[in-house]
Length: 247
Image (cartoon, rainbow, N blue to C red):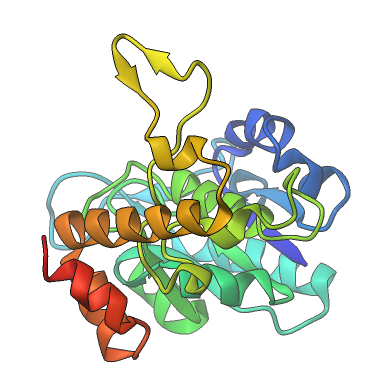
C-alpha cells in the first residue's frame, strides 16, 4: 500500500520511518510512505501557504491553492483513485476496526493541516475522509498521520517479530474487543511483588482462564462501554457473565 503525506514538515517523519519495529514495513515498502513538501507548490519569493482569515480572529489559515496544486501532483504520480484524508475534529474517531480497514486498503493521500485550519473550500472540493484521534487538538496533522501509519504498519505480515502479536492487542476482535491483560517478566519477585501463580503454573488452560478474567475485570473497570459492546455482539460466555457478576 502507498500513503502520500502532504506536509509543511516532512523532516518530522525521518526518525519515525527509521526507528522501531515498524521500520521494516517502510524499508520493504509494504507500507510505501512518500512525503510531499507543500511549500514546493506555493508561489512567490516566500512560498506562502497561509493567510489571515476572513472575518478576523486569531491565527492563520492554510491557503487552498497550494494544497490543490500539491494534491494534483500527488494524484498524477499515483494514477489511482486514492482517498484524500484529513485529520480533523469533526472526523470519525479512528479505532481498531478502522485501522484494520486501512491496513487492507491500497493506501491514501494524507493531508496534514496546520495553524487554525484549512480553507474550507479545499476541504469541500477535495477531501474524501475526515478522521480524528480524539477530542483534543494537536498543533498539526503530522502526529495524527504518524499514529495511523504506525498502527497500519504493525498489522502487515512479517513486521512484528511474532506474527500473532497483534492478535492479542487491546480492542482486537480476537479478544472480543476487550482490553488486554497485565503482563509480567523476570524476576518472579520484584520489590516484594510476585508474579501471579497462575502464570507460573505451566498449565495452559489455567493461564488462559486467568488472562480472560483479567481482561474482563480491567475492561469492566476502565471501559465498561467495551463490555456492553461485547455483550451486545454475543461475545461473552456464561462463564464470563458469572465472573463479571462477582466484581
